[in-house]
Image (cartoon, rainbow, N blue to C red; front, top):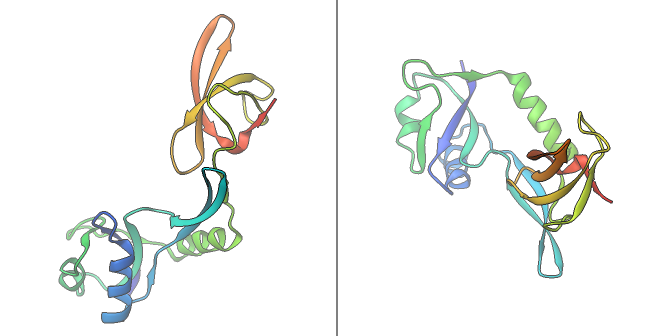
Length: 165
């Protein structure tokens, strides 16, 4: 019985692995992508990036197809290993596909500049002012510096929780 499993690819090889598993082996593969907005110079660009870099989902019949998959060029491993491969529920795949379809994670990059004053608009620190420090990752997390009751703290949060003053 085929079930969804997570296949880890070697760095920068997820698209290649997905193509090989689909075209050569005839497997159902899902390699979720996300659209992000970036700024290069004065131009705003939309780029499509992997939602989970170096990971993809494939419907596999394990352990029968174990060697076939692990010896595919670009595959690093199947999560869970030979003894305990961990299947992913269909509901999880459906939820990821729905989120990808609705583009919930369309991220506006570089809205803030270093040392710019920002205010938190949601969460436990709502209405607290801080200073923007830097972007932490491609997922839209940022680091801001807060001064609370004589104590300075660096806090990481989602960029959507912030706005300019």
